[in-house]
Image (cartoon, rainbow, N blue to C red; front, side, top):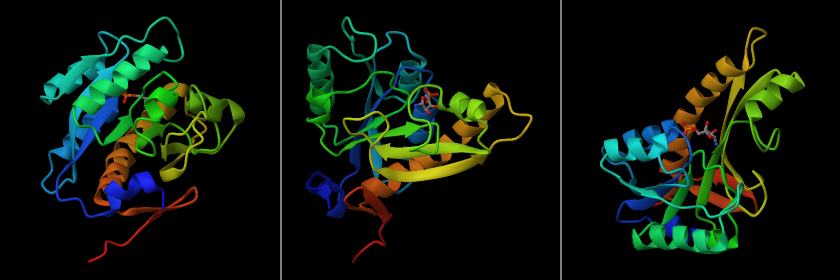
Length: 220
Ligand code: GRF
């Protein structure tokens, strides 16, 4: 068991406070926020951050009454400047965030951030990892001639899309698929598994052994 995951296993008596980071339109945020409104949902989304000033995800956050925060990224294109990363971690910590859910966050997070939320950052990726990590995974799958695509919820580690896998859903690739149709079906699947993976995680029902995540039966 990852020691940092103990907050998930002790049968928390409060709703786990989740921060979401994204750079895009925010469809996964909407799925997570809708699930959070259901009775007995074990998590609540307390803040949404974006490195893109006018990103749709910030507007979707406001629609749900969740605090939207623009996090200036600094001068790099693919990562946050160290000061920006420390700032992002501070903003989330000050909001009492216990778990960070990345939802289309287009920058690689480094140690200043991952260290602050060790073992508590998750991501949704549009492929069946370890196949097709990186950008435009649905296009990679199509171009490769794969017959099955899908999506993966995984923990975030120092690598690119290499962390322990929490949940996956397969999506068949049809001969008639285009990038647009396949991507849309993968995103439909994402909106199913992301809220469910976060629910199980925050309920304490995901057990880890090394990099193996298993769905544990609730105790007590
Ligand atoms: C998702 O499809 C996810 O696979 C990828 O980024 C996309 C974000 O979309 N990591 P949205 O902003 O949640 O609509």
